[in-house]
Image (tube, helix red, strand yellow):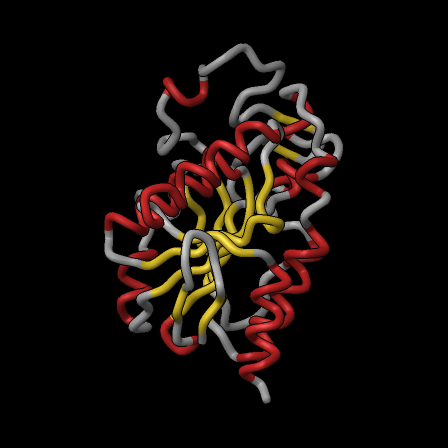
Length: 223
């Protein structure tokens, strides 16, 4: 398959490509969650949900591999360094009790993926203690076992966990494609800058395209 992506076409074999959905969690996207307690407008992130749903539905229908990540820590916070927990001056910190349970703690209500994009049986779900999807997770080994060489990214936030994961993927030899309208930031200018950085200099980190382009490509492949 081929998408006329930016900065040039992106070729991929569905059988060797995974859709990676980064941190579409209640705490980041829904009102009352961690993201809002930091003073952010979560409606910016919620706006991408329909596009993400459309791509996820089409990807599943085509039989493609799906990976979901959650930024999550152990209940005792043993995998959350103080430098991360104490950063900034938030009203609630990682591990504190929030409206949806303890903030960014595995198993808590707010730490779950939003219902609209909830994983189904057979999909990979990874809890990650860092920003990147590969740090302290089995993702690379799982992808190697599945003979995956290409990754399509969606999720939040563009300039933090998504960009970090794409850079980690690039260093490990994967060809990454970011769906621009399926990712967002609390700061639109940060998203714009991150997208430009990733596809600069001949896709130095990866390619970008739109959900419409991906949907059209998948539809064409189904005949």
